[in-house]
Length: 108
Image 1 (cartoon, helix red, strand yellow):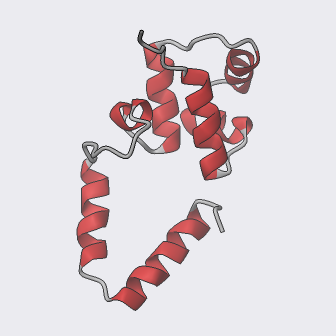
Image 2: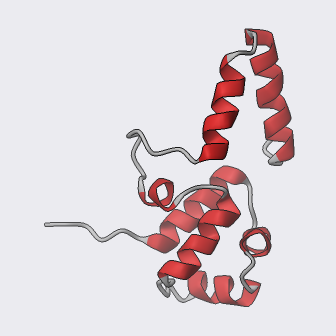
């Protein structure tokens, strides 16, 4: 028996992890807040194009959105670049980079 993927639950989970309000996600995703809010409140399933926009707002790929396990995922070119730069830093510089990125993402 297969279990259906709950897109709205995943959106809520990612918002909580990133500290995003639905308004902030809508703004980052370039979709109307009313569309996102109605979708979440009424448990309407979004179209694939809306999910793509939401992924852009979260800064993740569709694969990352639908992959809820800790399995390896394909990285975007920007993510690969960040990891390559991170790997050449000293441990102290890596710690500073993490703090800086948390500050940029409002997750302090």
